[in-house]
Image (cartoon, rainbow, N blue to C red; front, side, top):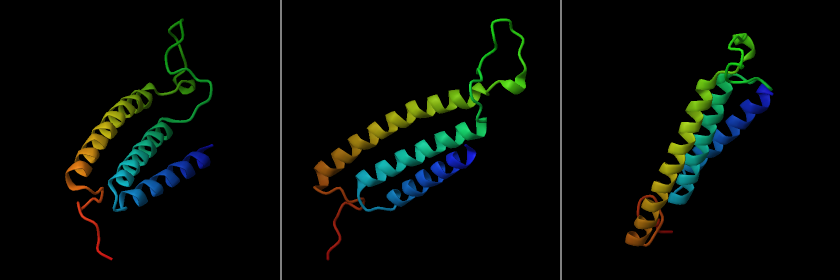
Length: 114
């Protein structure tokens, strides 16, 4: 399971970096989103992968910490998802305004002459 997660994070990170280096603003925004998702998966992976383990204490209040998942990475990723969604929405609005002002979606504001 850890190998699948590591490969998935690597593919998402590589794709995000490749899209960040593209000349169009939409591709840059998608690349930033992919990097954000890769970081979220990395934080989940660092928190530990456990199946069917509760992140909170049972009703009795006594539990073995070795069998529980860490709730902090889950809270961090939930916050990062909300912030990433808001940032992506802001980037899209800025991209649309820039395209309206310059007439192109090139990151430099002008097309390369061929």
